[in-house]
Amino acid sequence: MMGSTLRIILSASLGIVLTVPAGRAQPVAPTRPRTDCTAEAQPDRLQSLSQEGDLVLASGRLAKLAGIRLPDGAPYREQAISWLQVRMGEAMLAQAAAGPDRWNRISVRIRSLDKTSSFDWSHGLIEAGLAITDAGLDETFCQSELLALESTARERRLGLWADDRYKPMDVNQPERLRDRIGSFVLVEGRVRSIGERKQLSYLNFGGLWAEDFTIIIPRKTWKQMSDRGMGTEALKGQRIRARGILQPWQGTVFSIVIPDMIERLEGGRLPR
Image 1 (cartoon, rainbow, N blue to C red):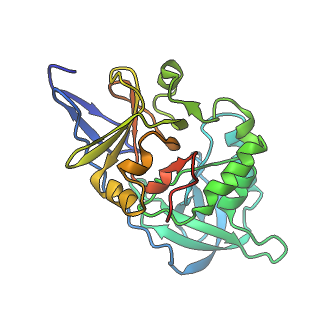
Image 2 (spheres, rainbow, N blue to C red):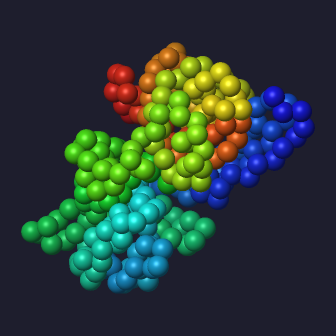
């Protein structure tokens, strides 16, 4: 237990501030762009790519693909960029899945218009093992099928899934987890205990707070999970897979802001 107040500001991608008194902290869930899964798709074209891999559309909009995250290292990031560059100038439909983020990027679903190769771009990158599903990018996760497509690519060891760096990590390997602080990771482990507080719930995977991995769940998300039948009784003692950006806090931690960021490894995925 910590005897003095310690403030830890998590990465901008999470937008959470932790205040740590003598006990558990009270992070505040970030304000997130609202998402509309049924927005009308508009014709557009990919004009260019930014140095960061963002999409510059012919309509003048700066965009990112909804529901996925490009790899953060070579050679897979370069391969993902090349995959996108091949589609430069290709006619497509862009569906704005969310409003602009802090970098003025809109989150979009893109489908090719070519009848011989009509497909969803996020699906294509995931199926090739050139992207990772990130259900927490927007307020609503509109493509739950991405998790199944990713699972198949992982089983087939396609693209980045042939690299141990990207494979799900065991929560009982604290040193390996600490090495990946600041990175988007997949972790797997058994929920040992659950702490429910007014604003936050905690999934604990060990008995040593200073060393073990913890998942923090804001009240709104915990209610959504409970409404799906995934509250304390359903999760305690169960093996799960979760995804997020690792941060240092009494061991390692990340925050779950969308129920789909957690998958049960025993008994299937969260009910919708």
